Every structure is written in C-alpha cells, then in structure tokens.
Image (cartoon, rainbow, N blue to C red; front, side, top):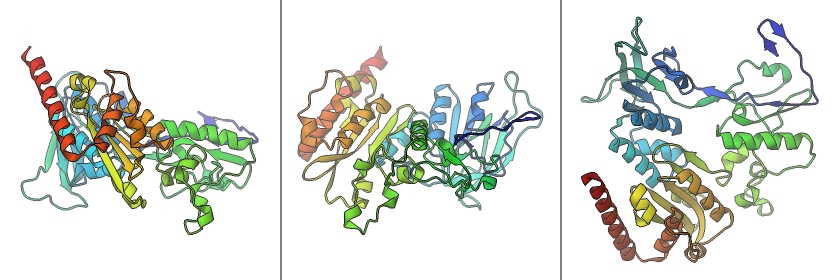
Length: 415
C-alpha cells in the first residue's frame, strides 16, 4: 500500500479487492474538470451552466439530463443510436417504458441529436467560470462511425459545459494484478468464479463490486461483498446457471430458484431475475424480470401483457398522470414474469412487483388482492383487471381516466 512516499506491506489469510470503478473516458475528449466533465467529475462543478451537451443514452446520461433540465439549463443529448429508445431497451427496459422516458425528455425541452457522435472540440483557453462571461465550447459532430452527417443535420453545438456519460470501467489499472496471477477480462474487470474467488496463484483473494464489472450497481456490489466474505469462511459448493448444461435435462434449473445464491457477474448476467433496476430520473423508471420480448426469446409459449396508466388511480391522476405500470405474464395460467414501471415512486413500487414474480403469483391472485385507497399500489390490481378484461373495456376505462386527468391539469393551470 503506497501513501505518498511511504510504502506499507499488509498480509492476511483472505484478501477482498473492492476498488470500484471509474467513468469510461473516450479518447479525443479534452477532459479538464472545468468545462469538459465525466460522470464523476461533474459532481465537482462549481457553477450552474446555462447550457450543457451530454453524450450518452443510458441510465447515467438520462439522470443527468433531467437534473440539469430541472435546474434550468438548456440540455442537448447526443445519441449514437438513431432510435433513442433502442439504447434503453438494450439494457432491459420495456419498450413502452423506454418510449415514455424518451417522450418525457422531449416534452421537457431536452434536444436529442440522433445517429451522431462528437468529432472535435474547441474549448476556450482563457475562460472565466463561476462568475463572469464565458465563451462557448464548440463541439463538431459527425455521423455514427465517422463521416459527414446527412444534409440538414445539426453539425455543431455551442454550450457552456460538456458531459461524457458513456459508461464505467473497473478500477484495476494500478493493482499490478498480473504479478499475483489474477486475470481480468477485456474491459479490465477481475475474473472471478461463482464464489467471487479470483485466479490468484498465491493466497485466498476475492473480488466484489464494480471491480469485477457489470452491472455496476450499489445493490449488487453490496451483495457481492457479503457473498465474498461468506465464501471465505465456507467450503460449500455453489452451482450457478453458468455451470448448467441446457442439453442435460437433469441440470435444467429454474432461474428463480437461483436468485440470491450466486452473485458473480456471469451468474447475474445470465439470470434475468437476479436483481431489480431503478432509474432515478424524473419520472422514475424501474423494472424486474422479463420484458415481453425477453419472455418470447426465452421460450415462454404464450406471453401476455397489461398496462395500468397512473391516470387510472386517484393518486396518479393528481400527482403523476403520465405514468404507467406494465405486467408481463404467461398464459393461460397468468403467472407474472415481469413488472415494468415509469412514474412517481417507480423505484419503490418495483419491490412489490419483484415479490410477485419471485412468489410465482398470478394475474388472478393480484386481481383478488385489496390495496389501501389513494396509493400507487392500486395500479397493480388495475393492471391485473385489465389483463382479465376484454379489449373494449380496457380502452373505455383508459379513455375515461385520461379525460379526468386532463381536466384536473386544466383546472390547476387556470388557477
């Protein structure tokens, strides 16, 4: 361990590496911590920008876009994909939730430049930040993959501040892992087995959290830390989904049965029921389990989905009329396999949805449940009832709810 000029050697029977991650910094971007930031250094910004350009289309980019939008900044999102919702669907978001989030960005006045990437920066050398006038940062754009953008496209952006929010990478560069026989993947993440043990050739070395790679979440990192410590003092062998041969009938495992057993990156990536995802934007978004597309790809025979609009419950009509909750279920039994939410308190509401999926509850079970009045949890029963209703009944109920919500908003605006 090095601290200044002092070097100290620490020994132990078991060692846990948990050095976290850092923002990925693409080559060619002149990060300076004054005008050009990554998703960590932006937390130290000493002024409120009037305008900001953000590269990225994932969770971090959207969260910061809404933060600066709510602070009054003029926000521009630069997205490589031609369809912004596609990038969100790639990380597991349901298509309706992804479309709702993108629509909200546009409705809030956030400009989205699609199918483009940054080509060149012109950052003023002499600048006054945090007080006086500032010259604009000039950003030249090109099409995704390089080359000129189509005629009529935005080719230059001028802004106070630029933020690159294009993912994270493990903090392993200065650990000298090769000398200990510890292997890493192509992104620098430490390779571990399903007990979080590394490939160290000497001693008992484990790794947990962002340093082992995706999904880069505080929740999974904490669980990995606990699992690694438990593994240090246990000889129990764990069988992960990675070790199951899909061609061996005796080894076919229900992913729900493996939840909470293995927390290594491979097991988490293979198990769609391993953990919930929350996006702390405004509105919030969250999901657990499978989307309709994922359920079909996994071989579920007959997949259904039902949606409850926030406007269909009293609390939603007043506070968050544009939100939605979707249930994905397997027919004909109605077993719920996924829950997707966009709207107020989505990151809290998802945990009830997670228990529905883990408990193998059905649409009928949910329809027979009673929830306290004037709560968002009523949406679960409304969605279950929608799954049991015919198409015309669903449309009539949704139309009435939307009309009532619009009237409430109109009355608020007239006061």
